[in-house]
Length: 119
Image 1 (cartoon, rainbow, N blue to C red):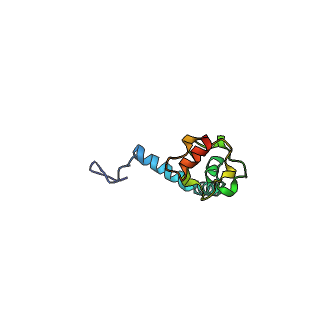
Image 2 (cartoon, rainbow, N blue to C red; image 1 turned 135 degrees about the horizontal axis):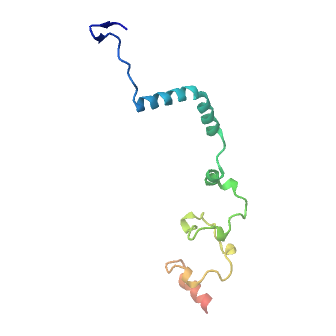
């Protein structure tokens, strides 16, 4: 350090602020642990889906015959637009389960069905 007539020719020492110190510490941490973080990312991204996520992906092939029963269905879950054509026939309907109120007035042959059954 050279002193000339009361002046110092050396640059003053700069002190780092807290945010600069934290940023420097974080940068060192990330550089030193990069490989570890990369390994964790690969391990978690390649793991199988957890049970709650996989259950949302179950398709028709994943359901056994007879596994879906009436109590397991939500109210009004099965409506006419969801049924395949000719999927419900008289052989599949339990006797006495269809009442007069269940049949629409505009149904084909409604009056003849009701009058024959009621008599």
